Length: 50
Image (cartoon, rainbow, N blue to C red; front, top):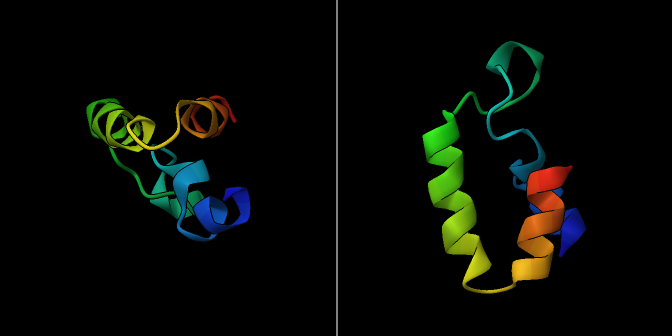
C-alpha cells in the first residue's frame, strides 16, 4: 500500500510542484486524507505524517 501511495504522489500532496509535489492546499489535503481514512485509518495517518 505504501509503495503504491508513493507512486501516486501522496507523499507530496501539498509540496510545491517545483520540487516534485502536487501543490495542493492544506484544505485539499485534508479532504483527500479524510476520504482515504474511510479505507484504512492507520495507513492514512502514516502517509499524512510522513
